[in-house]
Image (cartoon, rainbow, N blue to C red; front, side, top):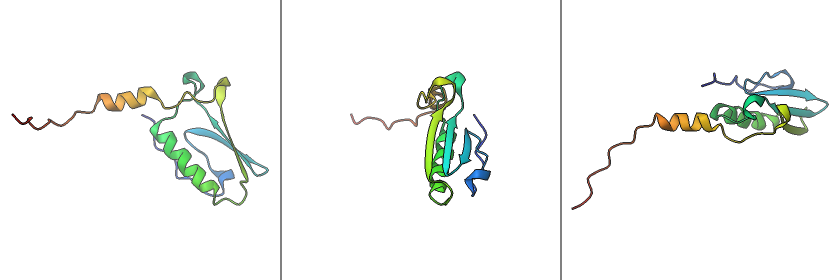
Length: 101
């Protein structure tokens, strides 16, 4: 599992994200998903950091446009299945109550 993201700080031009690349120039914030070896899947942590980032964009007067892209010729394969399955594979369900006879 990856380490938690840094808190998103303003101005966004000075923010260094953990789960994606960021460049802010001329009012355009360019987010690049950067796990090309896996086709840029999103993890629970990257979803959280992106959510916090997009909320912060609304408060940064310098950011007028957001461009989201993926490194390595792929946008994103979606959710990181290995992370999702890995968490569920460690889940232990509670015992069900006995069914009525």
